[in-house]
Amino acid sequence: MAFKRYIPVESISELTINRLSVYLRCLQQLEHEGTTTISSQELADRFHLNSAQIRKDLAYFGEFGIRGVGYNAAQLREHLVNILGLHEERRVLVVGAGNLGTALSHYSGFNTGGFRIVAILDSDPRKVGKRVPGGLVVESVSDLTRIVKERKVHIAVITVPSNSAQKVYDELVEAGVQAVLNFAAAQLKGHPEVKLKNVDLKIHLELLSFFLTHASRLASVT
Image (cartoon, rainbow, N blue to C red; front, top):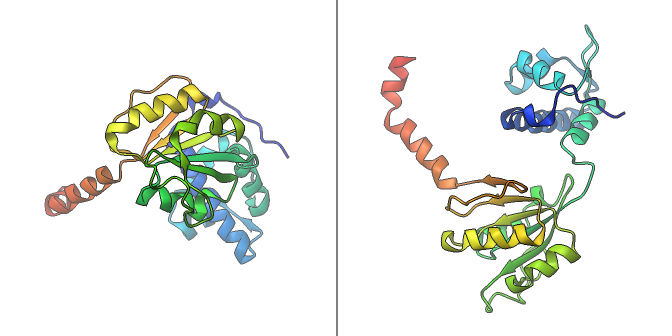
């Protein structure tokens, strides 16, 4: 069954979309356990979520539950798969065959649930031609444009050194990639037609360090 989108997609926040992914994982676990029906409150209690927030997030896209009964877990999971676009195959390209890029290229989360890594590229001639765990052979970044077009790449993952990230990003945009996940520690100048998401792991560590440093003061405030 197709879902009905109640509001323009551009008005839906990334936080809401992130929570939809969390709900999907919860429903997948419930299905695996054999649960067929669950209420928003039961879902919240089971996975430490907020029931009102669940109902609000889902209401952006339609009416999925039955009052007094709850949600059919399998049907709601299917709705979320469609909302997140996971019913279509998203082909992913990794640029940078270092430790992180190699690890991501055979990470199961990047090769399941609608995603498929189709290539890993690098500029180092010593890496080109070598097979990485997962089965892919490292290809030359000089072939980026051809590979993007021939393999119909939708999403690119950047794991190159920070001083090369902008150049790689611009080449990906020029080649026609529609979305980029950037792991390089660099603030990239984006292009309006391409969705750019930055993931700086050190920023998250620094955030945790901040909380550890100020834990006693924060505890006294709350």
